[in-house]
Length: 123
Image 1: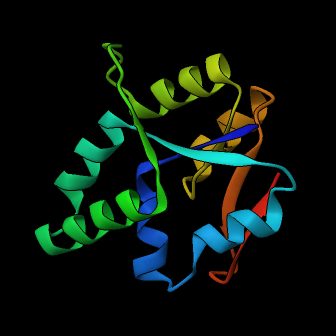
Image 2: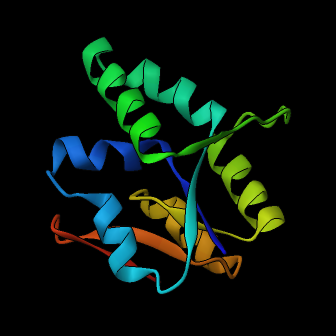
């Protein structure tokens, strides 16, 4: 089974670009998979979104069965924590953050990102 670790910004894609990331995951991942997000990403998401948008995102997470993974790490940089967690748990990282994508690929991790604001691609 594949594990897909969602970055903070990735949950904004359905709302900001009107792309159904969940059907796109099914299209590009050719085996069974589950979706994860770190608790610190949700905290960050709450800070950067309006309350109504955050509530909609949380409803979507619940509806789609995204698992919230607790972190006990005291790493200040969330991107570093995402890389560490993905490496330790053999996850594909779903992100639109160019620097995180570059770092992840440099670590030999697979990355899913939004291409042309229309569809997802896996590297």
